[in-house]
Image (tube, rainbow, N blue to C red; front, side, top):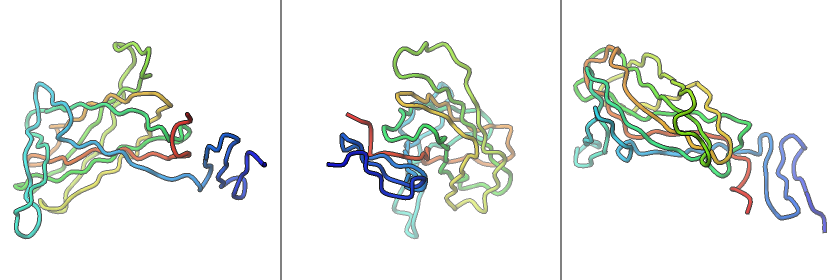
Length: 197
């Protein structure tokens, strides 16, 4: 029996190891996303409110959102574990799903994520310098359209690490209403079907 069989051109390929494990390189890899519902995050001392946004022509369906003030910084927190199929040679990217408040008429929003990556085991909780990434100034088309904002910044994680996140609206922005967040998303490149046994 032949082990270590590779299918592809060498650069873009799928390899099956002697243990049957499948790994992928080049264009054989795939992008995946991890979604964190905004309403499932831990709210800070100054907390965004949990609310609902009407969707559909009837308005009878309600979408859960967190609403962030236009005058007071409000905070929420979450933890992300490294996906078991992560290709650690490629960065993760943060995406935000949101809408302006229903009464928005003018101005721009600025959303920020402060985060710290640490090992899941043995890390000193009070060590490390957080990074902050920003959406930049975002002007909605109107007050009733979903927006996905893809942050350009690279986030680097390795196997068995945690990302501790602090998300907030920068109230130095100029939007004239609350901002509504539905969920956070992390896009990453996968190079296997999971973690080896």
